[in-house]
Amino acid sequence: MLNNTTVYIAGYPVRETTQNGLVNSIFSRISASKKSVLFFANTNFIVNCRLLAERFYIDDVVIVNDGLGMDIASILMHGRKFKANLNGTDFMPYFFSESQKKLRVFLLGGSPTAINGAACYLEQKLGHVVVGTCDGYDGIKNASNLVDIINAASTDVVLVALGNAQQEEWILDNYQQINANFFAGVGGLFDFWSGDKPRAPKWLQNIRMEWFYRLCIEPKRLYKRYTLDVLRFLVSCIQYRKQGVK
Ligand code: UDP
Image (cartoon, rainbow, N blue to C red; front, side):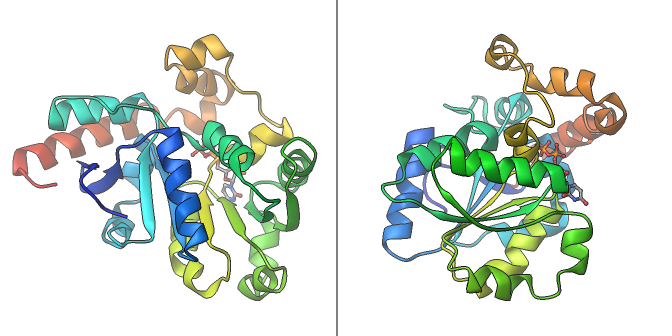
Protein backbone atom coordinates (compact mmCIF):
# COMPACT_ATOMS: atom_id res chain seq x y z
CA MET A 1 0.00 0.00 0.00
CA LEU A 2 2.78 2.45 -0.87
CA ASN A 3 1.60 5.78 -2.27
CA ASN A 4 2.53 9.44 -2.26
CA THR A 5 1.82 9.73 1.45
CA THR A 6 4.67 7.36 2.27
CA VAL A 7 7.34 8.85 4.55
CA TYR A 8 10.59 6.88 4.69
CA ILE A 9 12.01 6.49 8.19
CA ALA A 10 15.42 4.77 8.43
CA GLY A 11 14.64 2.50 5.48
CA TYR A 12 11.03 1.72 6.40
CA PRO A 13 8.05 2.94 4.35
CA VAL A 14 5.68 4.61 6.83
CA ARG A 15 2.19 5.66 5.68
CA GLU A 16 1.23 9.18 6.72
CA THR A 17 -2.46 8.99 7.47
CA THR A 18 -5.10 9.59 10.12
CA GLN A 19 -7.14 7.15 12.21
CA ASN A 20 -10.11 7.73 9.92
CA GLY A 21 -8.09 7.49 6.70
CA LEU A 22 -6.52 4.24 7.85
CA VAL A 23 -9.79 2.63 8.87
CA ASN A 24 -11.40 3.57 5.53
CA SER A 25 -8.47 2.19 3.59
CA ILE A 26 -8.56 -1.13 5.50
CA PHE A 27 -12.33 -1.56 5.15
CA SER A 28 -12.23 -0.76 1.44
CA ARG A 29 -9.56 -3.42 0.94
CA ILE A 30 -11.60 -5.90 2.99
CA SER A 31 -14.65 -5.17 0.79
CA ALA A 32 -12.51 -5.85 -2.28
CA SER A 33 -11.35 -9.16 -0.69
CA LYS A 34 -7.79 -7.86 -0.54
CA LYS A 35 -5.59 -8.72 2.40
CA SER A 36 -4.22 -6.00 4.67
CA VAL A 37 -1.35 -6.31 7.11
CA LEU A 38 -0.97 -3.47 9.61
CA PHE A 39 2.12 -2.71 11.68
CA PHE A 40 2.59 0.09 14.20
CA ALA A 41 6.16 1.36 13.99
CA ASN A 42 7.70 2.82 17.13
CA THR A 43 11.41 3.13 17.93
CA ASN A 44 11.48 -0.50 19.12
CA PHE A 45 10.01 -1.67 15.80
CA ILE A 46 12.58 0.31 13.77
CA VAL A 47 15.49 -1.17 15.75
CA ASN A 48 14.22 -4.77 16.02
CA CYS A 49 12.66 -5.35 12.60
CA ARG A 50 15.77 -4.45 10.56
CA LEU A 51 16.15 -7.97 9.13
CA LEU A 52 12.55 -7.86 7.89
CA ALA A 53 12.72 -4.35 6.39
CA GLU A 54 12.78 -5.49 2.73
CA ARG A 55 9.65 -7.57 3.30
CA PHE A 56 7.59 -4.51 4.23
CA TYR A 57 7.76 -3.19 0.64
CA ILE A 58 4.69 -5.04 -0.61
CA ASP A 59 1.23 -3.85 -1.45
CA ASP A 60 -0.55 -5.73 1.36
CA VAL A 61 1.50 -4.11 4.13
CA VAL A 62 0.89 -0.75 5.74
CA ILE A 63 3.16 0.63 8.46
CA VAL A 64 1.99 3.61 10.49
CA ASN A 65 3.86 5.82 12.97
CA ASP A 66 3.47 5.22 16.69
CA GLY A 67 4.97 7.58 19.26
CA LEU A 68 7.13 10.59 19.86
CA GLY A 69 10.32 8.93 18.55
CA MET A 70 8.81 8.64 15.07
CA ASP A 71 8.00 12.37 15.02
CA ILE A 72 11.55 13.18 16.10
CA ALA A 73 12.86 10.90 13.33
CA SER A 74 10.60 12.53 10.76
CA ILE A 75 11.80 16.01 11.79
CA LEU A 76 15.42 14.80 11.62
CA MET A 77 15.01 13.15 8.24
CA HIS A 78 12.38 15.29 6.49
CA GLY A 79 12.09 18.51 8.50
CA ARG A 80 8.50 17.93 9.66
CA LYS A 81 6.49 15.70 11.96
CA PHE A 82 3.68 13.31 11.09
CA LYS A 83 0.16 14.74 10.93
CA ALA A 84 -1.24 12.13 13.36
CA ASN A 85 -0.02 9.54 15.85
CA LEU A 86 -1.40 6.02 15.46
CA ASN A 87 -0.93 3.26 18.01
CA GLY A 88 -2.55 -0.15 18.26
CA THR A 89 -4.05 0.42 21.67
CA ASP A 90 -6.15 3.35 20.44
CA PHE A 91 -6.59 2.29 16.85
CA MET A 92 -7.89 -1.28 17.28
CA PRO A 93 -10.97 -0.35 19.38
CA TYR A 94 -11.73 2.37 16.81
CA PHE A 95 -11.38 -0.15 13.98
CA PHE A 96 -13.80 -2.55 15.69
CA SER A 97 -16.27 0.23 16.49
CA GLU A 98 -16.37 1.24 12.81
CA SER A 99 -17.12 -2.24 11.49
CA GLN A 100 -20.58 -2.68 9.92
CA LYS A 101 -20.65 -6.36 10.86
CA LYS A 102 -19.62 -8.55 13.78
CA LEU A 103 -16.08 -9.66 12.98
CA ARG A 104 -14.67 -13.11 13.74
CA VAL A 105 -11.34 -12.56 15.45
CA PHE A 106 -8.45 -14.86 16.35
CA LEU A 107 -6.06 -13.70 19.09
CA LEU A 108 -2.45 -14.88 19.12
CA GLY A 109 0.15 -13.94 21.73
CA GLY A 110 0.39 -12.59 25.25
CA SER A 111 0.24 -14.60 28.47
CA PRO A 112 -2.62 -17.09 29.02
CA THR A 113 -4.32 -14.72 31.50
CA ALA A 114 -3.89 -11.68 29.27
CA ILE A 115 -5.30 -13.43 26.21
CA ASN A 116 -8.34 -14.73 28.11
CA GLY A 117 -9.03 -11.28 29.53
CA ALA A 118 -8.53 -9.70 26.11
CA ALA A 119 -10.98 -12.19 24.54
CA CYS A 120 -13.65 -11.22 27.13
CA TYR A 121 -13.01 -7.54 26.47
CA LEU A 122 -13.33 -7.93 22.71
CA GLU A 123 -16.61 -9.83 23.02
CA GLN A 124 -18.24 -7.95 25.90
CA LYS A 125 -17.01 -4.38 25.42
CA LEU A 126 -16.42 -4.25 21.67
CA GLY A 127 -19.14 -6.67 20.55
CA HIS A 128 -17.20 -8.95 18.20
CA VAL A 129 -16.68 -12.72 18.19
CA VAL A 130 -13.48 -14.39 19.35
CA VAL A 131 -13.18 -17.60 17.32
CA GLY A 132 -10.00 -18.81 18.97
CA THR A 133 -6.95 -17.89 21.02
CA CYS A 134 -3.38 -19.10 21.40
CA ASP A 135 -1.04 -17.63 23.99
CA GLY A 136 2.44 -16.50 22.99
CA TYR A 137 4.38 -18.82 25.29
CA ASP A 138 3.57 -22.56 25.69
CA GLY A 139 0.53 -22.16 23.44
CA ILE A 140 2.44 -21.12 20.33
CA LYS A 141 5.29 -23.56 21.11
CA ASN A 142 2.92 -26.53 21.26
CA ALA A 143 0.64 -25.57 18.37
CA SER A 144 1.90 -27.26 15.24
CA ASN A 145 -1.06 -26.44 13.00
CA LEU A 146 -2.03 -22.91 13.96
CA VAL A 147 -2.73 -21.86 10.37
CA ASP A 148 -5.20 -24.75 9.93
CA ILE A 149 -6.87 -23.92 13.26
CA ILE A 150 -7.32 -20.28 12.24
CA ASN A 151 -8.64 -21.25 8.80
CA ALA A 152 -11.05 -23.82 10.26
CA ALA A 153 -12.55 -21.07 12.46
CA SER A 154 -13.56 -18.87 9.46
CA THR A 155 -11.57 -15.97 10.81
CA ASP A 156 -11.88 -12.39 9.51
CA VAL A 157 -9.19 -10.74 11.63
CA VAL A 158 -5.99 -12.03 13.26
CA LEU A 159 -4.41 -9.94 16.03
CA VAL A 160 -0.85 -10.93 16.92
CA ALA A 161 0.82 -9.79 20.16
CA LEU A 162 4.29 -11.35 20.39
CA GLY A 163 6.42 -8.18 20.62
CA ASN A 164 8.79 -6.85 17.90
CA ALA A 165 9.99 -8.49 15.72
CA GLN A 166 8.37 -11.88 16.42
CA GLN A 167 4.84 -10.64 15.69
CA GLU A 168 5.85 -9.04 12.39
CA GLU A 169 7.78 -12.15 11.32
CA TRP A 170 4.90 -14.47 12.25
CA ILE A 171 2.42 -12.41 10.24
CA LEU A 172 4.68 -12.05 7.18
CA ASP A 173 5.44 -15.78 7.21
CA ASN A 174 1.82 -16.90 7.56
CA TYR A 175 -0.74 -14.37 6.37
CA GLN A 176 -0.87 -15.58 2.78
CA GLN A 177 -1.86 -19.09 3.89
CA ILE A 178 -4.64 -17.77 6.15
CA ASN A 179 -8.12 -17.01 4.82
CA ALA A 180 -8.59 -13.90 6.99
CA ASN A 181 -8.30 -10.49 5.33
CA PHE A 182 -6.90 -8.34 8.12
CA PHE A 183 -3.82 -8.95 10.26
CA ALA A 184 -2.28 -6.59 12.80
CA GLY A 185 0.75 -6.70 15.09
CA VAL A 186 -0.56 -5.24 18.34
CA GLY A 187 2.25 -5.44 20.94
CA GLY A 188 0.97 -5.03 24.50
CA LEU A 189 -2.73 -4.60 23.54
CA PHE A 190 -3.93 -7.81 25.25
CA ASP A 191 -2.19 -6.76 28.48
CA PHE A 192 -4.19 -3.52 28.41
CA TRP A 193 -7.51 -5.06 27.33
CA SER A 194 -7.28 -7.71 30.05
CA GLY A 195 -6.32 -5.13 32.68
CA ASP A 196 -3.09 -7.05 33.44
CA LYS A 197 -1.18 -3.82 32.89
CA PRO A 198 -2.51 -0.31 33.46
CA ARG A 199 -2.49 2.28 30.73
CA ALA A 200 -0.98 5.70 31.44
CA PRO A 201 -3.44 8.41 32.56
CA LYS A 202 -4.95 10.41 29.69
CA TRP A 203 -2.99 13.56 30.54
CA LEU A 204 0.32 11.67 30.20
CA GLN A 205 -0.84 10.20 26.89
CA ASN A 206 -1.78 13.71 25.72
CA ILE A 207 1.69 15.10 26.42
CA ARG A 208 3.21 12.07 24.60
CA MET A 209 4.79 10.63 27.76
CA GLU A 210 3.04 7.26 27.85
CA TRP A 211 6.44 5.60 27.27
CA PHE A 212 7.72 7.13 30.53
CA TYR A 213 4.78 5.72 32.48
CA ARG A 214 5.41 2.26 31.00
CA LEU A 215 9.10 2.57 31.90
CA CYS A 216 8.18 3.38 35.52
CA ILE A 217 5.80 0.38 35.69
CA GLU A 218 8.27 -2.11 34.13
CA PRO A 219 11.77 -0.63 34.51
CA LYS A 220 13.64 -3.95 34.25
CA ARG A 221 11.99 -5.03 31.01
CA LEU A 222 11.88 -1.63 29.32
CA TYR A 223 15.08 0.07 30.52
CA LYS A 224 17.16 -1.01 27.52
CA ARG A 225 14.33 -0.20 25.09
CA TYR A 226 14.12 3.41 26.23
CA THR A 227 17.86 4.09 26.58
CA LEU A 228 20.23 2.08 24.39
CA ASP A 229 17.65 1.21 21.73
CA VAL A 230 16.45 4.81 21.40
CA LEU A 231 20.08 5.79 20.85
CA ARG A 232 20.45 3.06 18.21
CA PHE A 233 17.25 4.32 16.60
CA LEU A 234 18.51 7.92 16.39
CA VAL A 235 21.92 6.83 15.03
CA SER A 236 20.17 4.74 12.39
CA CYS A 237 18.01 7.73 11.32
CA ILE A 238 21.08 9.98 11.12
CA GLN A 239 22.97 7.37 9.06
CA TYR A 240 20.10 7.00 6.59
CA ARG A 241 19.85 10.78 6.28
CA LYS A 242 23.60 11.13 5.66
CA GLN A 243 23.55 8.42 3.01
CA GLY A 244 20.64 10.25 1.40
CA VAL A 245 18.72 7.00 1.10
CA LYS A 246 15.11 6.30 2.08
N1 UDP B 1 4.92 -11.89 24.24
C1 UDP B 1 4.55 -13.19 23.94
N2 UDP B 1 5.52 -14.12 23.76
C2 UDP B 1 6.85 -13.83 23.87
C3 UDP B 1 7.21 -12.48 24.17
C4 UDP B 1 6.22 -11.54 24.34
O1 UDP B 1 3.37 -13.49 23.82
O2 UDP B 1 7.68 -14.73 23.70
C5 UDP B 1 3.85 -10.91 24.44
C6 UDP B 1 3.89 -10.22 25.80
O3 UDP B 1 3.24 -11.05 26.76
C7 UDP B 1 3.15 -8.92 25.50
C8 UDP B 1 3.44 -8.68 24.02
O4 UDP B 1 4.04 -9.86 23.53
O5 UDP B 1 1.77 -9.11 25.68
C9 UDP B 1 4.46 -7.57 23.72
O6 UDP B 1 4.24 -6.49 24.49
P1 UDP B 1 5.17 -5.20 24.52
O7 UDP B 1 4.73 -4.43 25.70
O8 UDP B 1 6.62 -5.54 24.41
O9 UDP B 1 4.75 -4.51 23.16
P2 UDP B 1 4.67 -2.97 22.75
O10 UDP B 1 3.25 -2.58 22.92
O11 UDP B 1 5.59 -2.21 23.63
O12 UDP B 1 5.11 -3.02 21.32
